Length: 464
Image: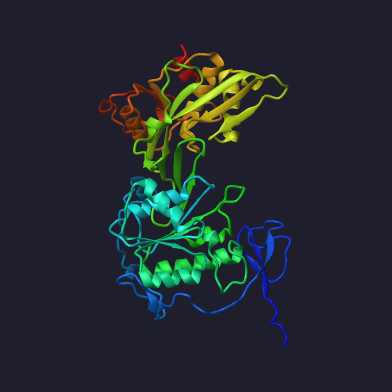
C-alpha cells in the first residue's frame, strides 16, 4: 500500500505568510530569507464545537450576519471584573474584559509565570484553570506556597496537548483560563513540532475561538526571541485582543508591565512591580522608587516629569560628560533613545556653546525604565550641562519640556498632571515651557513654576 504523501508548506517566520514553495522575499512583510518549511495537515474539524460552550449564559450564533446601518448598532458598555491587582487593572484599561484574549511576553526568568499565578490565586471568587506546559504540578504548588495565597477554585493542569486541554476545559468549565506558554502547546491536527509557526498560529486561533464563543477571558504567556520580540509569527499579536510586555533587568528588583496593544483601552499604560521573595509587590507610587535617595548633591543628576499613558512619573536622569580619551567620543545610553541624545548634544553645542563634541557622554535612566516621552529632553540636557560644568542641580528642582533644534523650549501635553505629581512628591520648583501654560491657574499649586522659551535662558537661571 502506497504511503500517503506528507503535506508541507512554507511559512514566513516574521509575519506568518503561507506559501506553497520557498520564496526568498516575503510578499507580505518584504523581509528576506524568512521562510521555513513545516509539515501541515489540513482539516475542517473543530476542536471546540458551538454546543460545547462552557461559560454561563454563553451562546454561539449559527445564523448568518446581515449588514446594518451605523445608527442601528446598539452600543453597550463593556463589563469588566476586578483582577484584584491594581497595576494589571491599569494596563488592561480598567479590569479584565470577558471573552478577551491577552498575550503576555517577556524574557526568560523575568517573572511572567509568577505574575499570572499570583493573579490566578487572587481571583478567589472565580474558577481558574492554570495550564502549564513548562513546569510540573509540584513546582507550581511550591511557587504558590511561596506566594502565601490560597485559592480553592484554582485548578492546575500540566499538559501540552491542546485537545486534552480542551477536554479538561469542558469538564471543569473555568471562568478564567491561563496558558503557560503558547509555545509549548501542540495540536494533533498539525503535524509539526510545538512552537513552530503553524502550531502557534493554530493553537492561538483555537484559543481565540474558545474565548469568544464561551465569553471566557484567556491569558496566554509567550516567549520572546533574541531580538526582544514575541516568538512566533507576527500575526500572533494581531490575533489577540491585548499584548502586554513584561520587562526589566533580572538583576534589579523592579519589573514593568507595559501595554503594547489593547482593543479595550489605552496602549500607553504602565504598571510597576517589585520582585520579592514572596512574589510581586504592586508599586502604587512609582516616583518614589524611580528617584534614588542620595546623601549628597552630585553633578549630572536631574529629575524629569514624564507621562506613561495617563500616569505621571518622576524619573531620575544621570549623565556623565568626561574628556574623550580616543579620537571619536563615545555616546552610550540606557533607557533613552541614542539618536535623540545625539540631537540634544548637537543643540547644546550649537545653541548653548557647550563643547560636548570633545567629551564622552553617558546617559542612564535610573530604575531600568525605557522612556520615549519628549518631555524628558530638558532633564537630559540639564543633567549633561550639570556634569559638564561640575555644578550640582538642587534636588528640589525638576523639569518637564521638549527641546527643539533651534534651542526653543517646546510645550508638552498634560503639563498640569506633571506639575501636580511634582508637587505631591515634595519638589519646590519645576521648569516648563512658557508656551504651554495657557489657562493654568498658578495659584492652586504650591510649587514654583518657572516658565521659559529658550534653552540658554533656563541654564542662565539654573546655573547662575
